Each structure stands twice: as structure tokens, then as C-alpha cells.
Length: 356
Image (cartoon, rainbow, N blue to C red; front, top):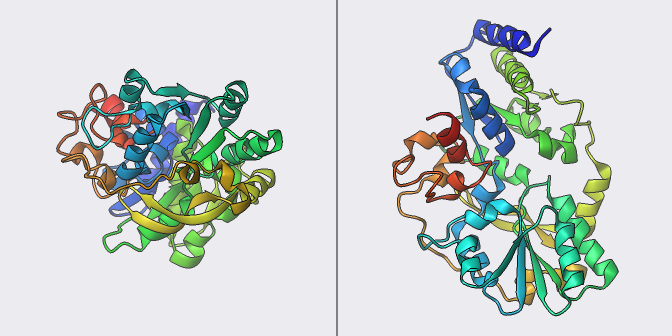
């Protein structure tokens, strides 16, 4: 059966399910972009609503951390390395970003892997090289590997500023908020490759919340949505794996071991969710010399949010991107105000590009 035929069959099956108003939240930036690009929202029945959750790592990084990164970039004899998405994220002052700091003389470089930053540190012994650790469990193992490699090589000039986040504490916090109104989660396939099916068991077992781990092709997303909606219709919440070609029951044990070797949980700040205990990845005490926050005495200060930007409400499912008063007006892909419009995985960027 061709993919389009399969999609049509899934859409007909979804339409036949006995459901009223139903809200599903995806918690993965790649899902967010794939759903928008394929026009999946417009294909579903009107009573099925797909919401974007805190699945974009750039978007959940709070304003005060972004401002701290901008200040760090101006340190003398320092090379700041980062994934490309972070360079355009605006600080609390309009127009400020890592791109602007680079224009002012900061040595800011885009890398494709944390190990690229380790190599730069090896090649530039007279410079301090900081890797900006952004992401969830998907990118945490690579950051852990870079720190452990730097220690093995004895590199005194390499550090990591860990802004890494764990998905589980954020979803627990989200489900405990007073106005939370979601009927099921489309679980992130990339994160699940690391933590496995077992990493989402708490959803049905502790909260009675259905969850399906999905892939990223339109057909895979629709299949996961159908399974999720069927759970909701049958009132039988559980975790189902609709992405078995990449996700196993137990996940990637090697990656999990590397994360344990490098990190311990710590309290972390999230845009839209505030401080969440155990949701960050802090370097272990024996790796403290590779902690940029400690080496450069980084103390994020409370800063004002961009006026009118409702990115925090978008990533917690309270509003759709189009409901933000700045969307498509003061905030566009060409001149973004908030990180949800900047990131290639941001809900506002996806809506602006594919759903306007």
C-alpha cells in the first residue's frame, strides 16, 4: 500500500472513532515541524486538536539564561561554540543575539557536534573554549561524551555551559498545573531512542495519561495519532511504541551510562514553566573543572521578557502560535521577537512557514 493510501485509511479510521473535543500534545520540535509541513492539523476532524508542548530545547531556555550566554560570549580570549539555532535567539534587549555579539567582536562559532568544540580546544590551547549544551536526553549523551573526552585528553581550556533539560520532570509539572487540559501525549521519538519505552511508563501508571511514541514521517505521525485517539476512545491509557525501528523497550543503555557518568540532576529554569526540581543536567563534582558556570562565575539575573511575546504560553499548550498578538506582525521569521519563532523546531516558526 502506498503511503498516501495508508494516510487516507488512517484518516478515515480516525474520523470513525467515537470522540468529542480531544486535545493531543506533541513534545518534540521535530514532530511540531513535521505536523505543520504535512498539513496534518488541517486533515484531522475539527474536534481533534494538536497542541505543541515544551519540546523545542531553544524555546524552553529562559530569557535570563540567554542573557547570561550573551554576556559570556564577550569574555576575553574565549571561543563560544554552539548549535546554529542559538545564534539568532534574541536577548532581553531587542536586536541583541549571539549574531550581534559576533559582529561586535565575540568569537562565536557554529559546531555540529560537541566533539567539534573539543577539537577546537585542542587546536587553540591559548583560548578558553565553551560549548553551549542545549537539548534534552537526545543531545545529553553527546555532551557527556565531549566532557569525558576532554578529561581523558587533559584539556584545561574546555568547558560546557549545561542548559540541558530532562523531559519527564517538565511533563510532570505540566500535568500538575491547574489549567492543564490535554487528553494524551504524542511522545518524542528522538528522546525515546535514548530512554526507551520504559522512560514514559509514568504517564499511564501515575497520571492515567495515554502516550504513544511516534516517528516523524507523515504516515508515522498519523499512525501514532490514531493509536493515541483509540486509547482515549477506549479509556485504556498505556504506552505504545509506534516507532519500533528506532525505539526499544529499554532504550540506549550506553547513552544512559554516559549521562550517569557525566551528570547529576539539578533544579533548572524553563520558559513558561518556571523552576523545576531535577529537570537539569549538572556536571558531577569530579568534572567541575569542565563546568563553564563555575569557571566563569555565571549567575543569571532576572530579566524582563520581550514585551508581548507569549512563547511560554505556546510551549505549554495554552495558546496556538496564531493567538499571540505579535505573531506575523511584530514577530516574523525575518525579524523574530521570541525563540519560538527563531528555532527551526519552534511552534511559531512552523506555523509561520507552513500554516499562515
